[in-house]
Amino acid sequence: MPRFNVSHAKDGKFERRGLRNYFEYRDLGIKRATKGKVVAHVIRARPGKAPHGEWHYHATNVQFVYVLKGWVLFEYEGVGRVMMKAGSCFYQPPRIRHREIRHSRDVQMLEIVAPASFKTFSAEPRSRKSPARRLRG
Image 1 (cartoon, rainbow, N blue to C red):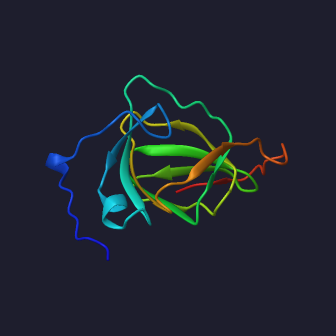
Image 2 (cartoon, one colour; image 1 turned 180 degrees about the vertical axis):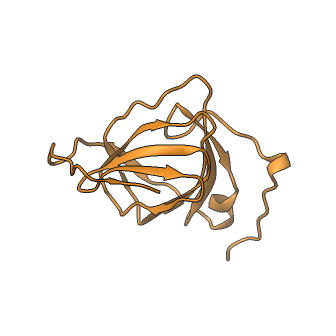
């Protein structure tokens, strides 16, 4: 049975270990509470680190992100570049190839993923053609 969990900002700690070395992650305790069904964390920009822009995808069932502060520019295979700003919420379908282009120094995002433990794979897009359109927030 899932456990009750609470995570207060004043007690939260950001750690540098995580999927990307240009971000810091604050675990919200959801992975433990759901026994690995879901992970939730706040992600923020790590000072002095820039994104690598490497194409990749995640083997997930569900992944969505809500931008709390700042902005982040992603590129998605078959979609093109998408600017996410504070208040933007986006769902990344399982295995969609994507990359981060850049982000503001103050970016903070809430990310929720299921399952909690998932694999990430490097992968160039299947087609080098990206649509010219740009989705804006």
